[in-house]
Length: 316
Image (tube, rainbow, N blue to C red; front, side, top):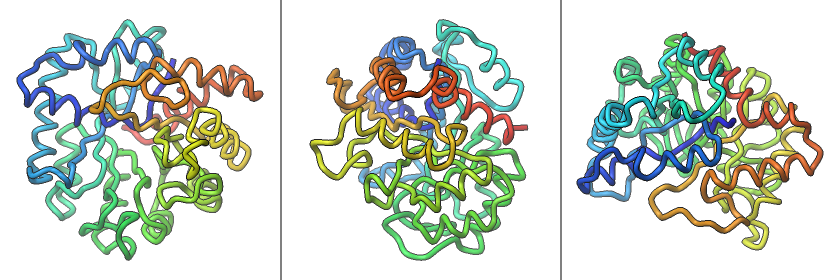
């Protein structure tokens, strides 16, 4: 069983519904989750800045998509709002029962730029927040922006954690991440970032950042997006992705490493086995980790238990 800490599937679901399709998750994606034994995930709201539609409009339409798809799926999609829902997921024994998801947001760029955005998101069922995407906003600066947390961003960090929402630092630039570490009062996750020591990109975490995130009780979610695996295209494969797992596990401990695969759902599902393109390939990846010396218990921690533990600490 597997929990994926970062999924962009809502963007794909909303696009298909906008084109007239209905019951999209069961029609196109449920089989993929079941084949990979993926029982749960964080589904993020995300506004694409390259679209003509305003970011706020994209977020609102994705929220409508979530509600419509949950109703259409007839139990195949089950929201996680709090610890009771999380306990139900933890006790599940097979993915045939459906897929549980925690609703998150990948950057507050498409929200009203004040602290009220946090309360509004919570009311919509959101339980995971990253302050910004790659750019900057009224809260923080992403990897393509300068500066750190603003005064509003510091308030947002506290409010997110007070309300029992998971705070995610992937996409923050180094200064904003440093500031979040100063402000945090609970576990942090870098839900879809690898090791910068193995692949030097600002989307990955430094050794010092990884240790600091682990010290909060949080974790780093391994990202299968090829440019974050290696700069050399010849090394953008599952073997080198497993290097990130091994390196971070040695650095901060297995209990602080998990998966946040960041799969792309709108450009087709490839079947090449050298890069993780769909959940059907996760079994091979887990076998690769076992051959590298990870025990079955450690693999269970990486694949499922670590994220469920952190969510159990955060949710109310």
